Length: 430
Image (cartoon, rainbow, N blue to C red; front, side, top):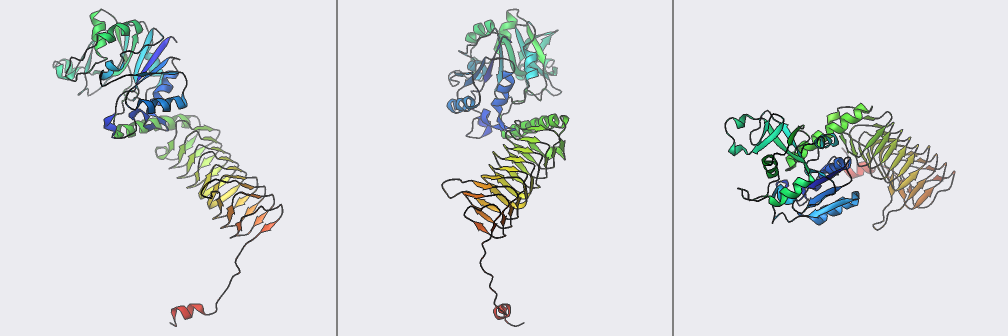
């Protein structure tokens, strides 16, 4: 489609009360600005992001995840306001869609609807039951006639329920003429993008209202707004995957990253969190478990299990209070209370309660390699780097600090000593 998109992300976002730029605050695993970029990329290949406050940081984050994004640095102290942000912005195509970087809930379908037709300007509008506090959009028959700030509304205009949603699709030729004409002769001393609507109407241009859903065009300006947007996004994500066949127990208690994916017959119990680019296949995640950036296939995890990033777990049972980090487990049982880090464990092996891989010496991480059909007894410490071959038994309470050959039993225990009648000597006769 011959359209350019401009995303305004130059604001300071003081109401967030944070050192993190507003548009980089995360919603469902992605900065809110990235949600807007994702929607824009489904429309076109010409995207410009307007930056000012913490511009270097925001640009660096975008460039780490996206290619072919154009950046425009705007001095919004010299040219404040949405109209000021557009000064000097040049784009490729004849239609220009302008949206805000703090609208993470906007969808590709809604943006597409704003690009349709032959109007000189398509303007997003919302119909509110209670429009109090908003400027009103006056619509005459099928076209916008003007935008009236609430303080300037007549009693009759205050009854209008249609308000500006803040996203526009404008013919490039109009923008190139109108933006240089904007002035800041107003109470806020800002350059308003909305002034182009009056300019267009005065010239007899067609300004067409496009009705959009209030939910999608919510701006995020505070941590409270951020939390509300997260709730909406999470509902969308959960609904999408339940429609795809994922079973969820008490879905409102479950968190799913927007990047996570599911395949086959999966079940998520209450309180589960799925983070990052996790991919689950035919898997049951039990209550209060956390999965981070991992592949889980034909397995069950939890309750209260934790799978940390870069783990690959196939055909495996992970029980309660087991933590796995950056490990490959294939056909393994680890029932409870264990830490498995930087390990590869093969089919048929059993990890007993209280087993830990000692993978870190304070400077570097080391690998633990465990073969097939290995029985690791409870309260065992595996001091990496170490390799345990197939068909090995490790007795409970053993510290393994050297490689174990196939078929061997490994056992290290301090001889048990008893002292007769010590209890009575210690506490005295009763």
